Amino acid sequence: MSFVADFNSLPLAALARKSIATGSAAAREAVGKTRISLADFAGLISPAAGGLLETMGRRAHALTQQRFGKTIRLFAPLYLSNECVNNCAYCGFSRDNPILRVTLSIDEVRREAAELQSQGFRNLLLVAGEHPKFVSNNYLRDCIAALHAGWPSLSLEVGPMETEDYRPLVAAGADGLVVYQETYDRTVYATMHTAGPKRNFDWRLETPERAYAAGFRRLGIAPLYGLADWRYEALSVAAHAEYLLRHCWKAQLTISLPRLRPCAGEFEPLTNISDRELAQLICALRLMFPDVGIVLSTREEPRLRDGLIPLGVTMMSAGARTEPGGYTGAGREKIHHTERGIIKELASGASEWAPQSHRPTNATGQFNVGDERSPQEVAGLIRKLGYEPVWKDWDAALTM
Ligand code: SF4
Image 1 (spheres, rainbow, N blue to C red):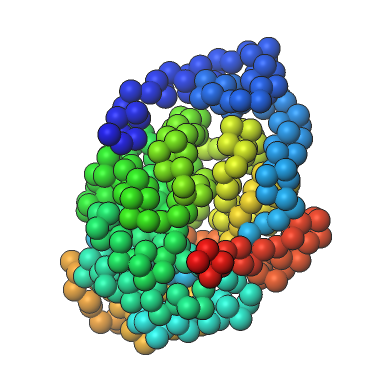
Image 2: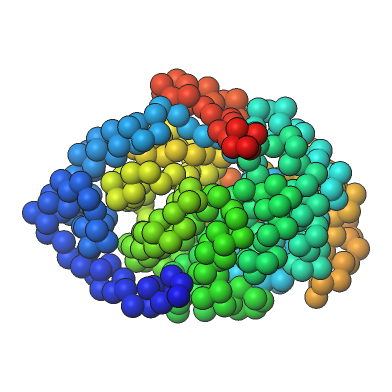
């Protein structure tokens, strides 16, 4: 039994239609409730409830302060590798994109992490494309082991694995796993993922459960907004969160709200969620899940990020680079193209997707970030809004 069975039986498409048709009285009723069902959530994300955003915002703000205090946890992504065997139409790292690629050595990973630590971070998200040859389980384990002593919190965003393959990563010191379903719409999923193991929708959907069984104590989920109807995606991720809270209850759950950004391959979003709708969605998620962490990345522009903080966001990235070696230039000498798993030497200036010149490395990033402020600037802004930026929120030593 897994979420797949629940997912297949839930009337998510019907709820998305019901959401659109919600009248103002029903929207007001949903906004006033203290316990939110999935049907109520459809009301909260309805166009009618969009007119009640101020009320929703006030309630979401109060709930967030009650459960999390006036704090924002900060983290940084560290890209280990941009090699990938999958073709995901919306991603710069897609196998068929002739981008500039590299996989960092363990020493280079240490250098990147040391730079992030000097900026203040103690919470790291290790990110890699899915490539069994370059990003093997042993490689990931060695990266984690190399960083574990200096990093109180290490999470992974890498290709899904079997429970047994996750266990050595947890033993080496990883405590969190982030896996975006990308889209919960099976038809759109099939058209977006045309090659590689990621084509298996159900396998991906069950990943948080396998990670939990292996001992991860933080789980992160999300759709990528811009592929399918946002209300359907929001209902699906809410249903997924509800399931995980029931079945993986010892883990801390976070929900992210990534919107598509420009990237190599120049994929255009298929659907749109406006800034205002994004704010409404954050409020709706907070009202339904008072204790779930809500993550906002540097995909969004500074003004919007600043404005969304008081509504329910609890965790933000800052100063993020989306290419391996992006913080120090590590791995620069090894940049190459990859064709069918074989490294091809680089003719100079050989990619139209080489990064902007101010970047310290030549590898191509996964997407262009929207907020290029430094971590210190972001932390300063958080303080200015009356919140405390939290760099370190966990110490394994305290649990012994
Ligand atoms: S989204 Fe992930 S799996 Fe797909 S191409 Fe990008 S890195 Fe690879």
